[in-house]
Image 1 (spheres, rainbow, N blue to C red):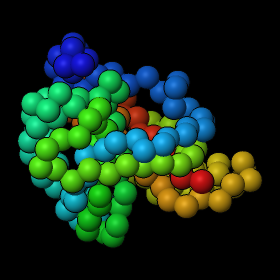
Image 2 (cartoon, rainbow, N blue to C red):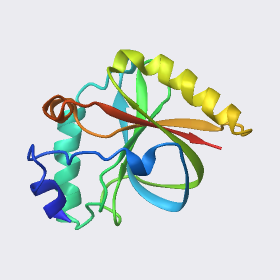
Image 3 (tube, one colour):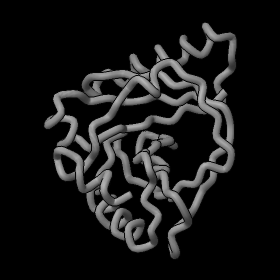
Image 4 (cartoon, rainbow, N blue to C red):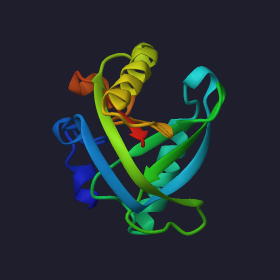
Length: 161
């Protein structure tokens, strides 16, 4: 699985394909994640690069890199978020979390300043489907440097229903 990361054009994040995530219903049962608390004043994650370098190394050493990279953010307040980093198996010494449920996905492309609009559009999408949303996760598909290199900044909103 290291090949996925090593063969990325940027040497970092692989290029994201939005098609499998566009307006889909996704079901997870005990999907395994490494969980981190991130300081995010006004939803801007600070120190995330250091956390990711450290956690990626731990994931590599544990043989826990996922087939498809994924990091979900669950914003708890204007100053903090829980980050869920997909893994293929448990990483010793780190907090683990398992997510189960049904999620509706909506893909957006653009600047993070549009996040408020994306949230509103995702809520409307869920309501149009006749569902009630329990929680919303933000899936940032690449780091800012890779988004710039690829010329696309995709964000997937996952609404748990």
